[in-house]
Image (cartoon, rainbow over the protein chains, first blue to last red):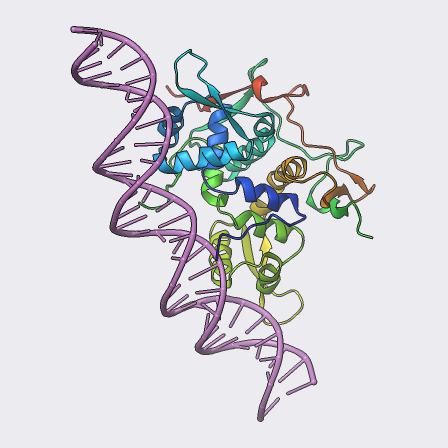
Length: 150
Length: 150
DNA sequence: TTTGAGTGGTTTCATGATGAAACCAATTGA
DNA sequence: TCAATTGGTTTCATCATGAAACCACTCAAA
């Protein structure tokens, strides 16, 4: 009766959600991308119970999304920083951000916006493109098994 | 002690996860994008308990991500199909797919790949670009509150 | 060098969410 | 007309979550 696992499944979406599919993990990663590093910083930002945060941080470390480092300020505490694998979640968060900004706010309700730091202009919405650069939508795509089954 | 809600929060990521942040919802949307429509099809594909599926479908309908339609084959049953808002989750699933494909499989383990249907070639990985087209990474971006607080 | 505040957790316990199975009504096919 | 299929709902045991209390360690100041 355990929470169903997608370990053996061939769909990468299912695999991702198997690791990141709980409520807090992506928010922790989001905060880590904003520069938060310390247990207390995450706890304050998210308002999550400390036992849950502890559990989630361990989970993310175990899956090589965060790693534990000695504190950068010279104190004896430790910090949680994103690994390469964790930083690669950036497009996922950008996509969620775009969808949320477009569909989960009332007209005029204040929200945060992602800017290109160099120019100070909003970033371009994510686009899916073909190898030759054509813009693709859901119905322009198809899924196949790779490597093909014999 | 309810499951924490992000309703009043200004971060669009948090708002998105408030709606889509449970384990099954995104998988249901994924299946809907693959063309599944009927209760039984989702149940068979996901292996989820029927009460949970029922609950999730209601949730997605309530949030205007799926809508209920009379069956397209003329029978008296009903179907669940994606709304515009639901279809807009496509980039989120693509991003999750890319991350999962890259980081959640062993070498050589079979996985599904997304092709451009017209050419039969794999799609280009998602890229975040600035308004002027420059490729952006996490550290090239910045968040601001919009509209700015007085 | 003690002391008191702050940090980073773990433990405990009540409650909510999940999942399996049984059940049931309406629809469909034979 | 009768049995199987579809699309659920109900029930109940178990798991996960969250709040609060607790605790050990670090650090800064007296």
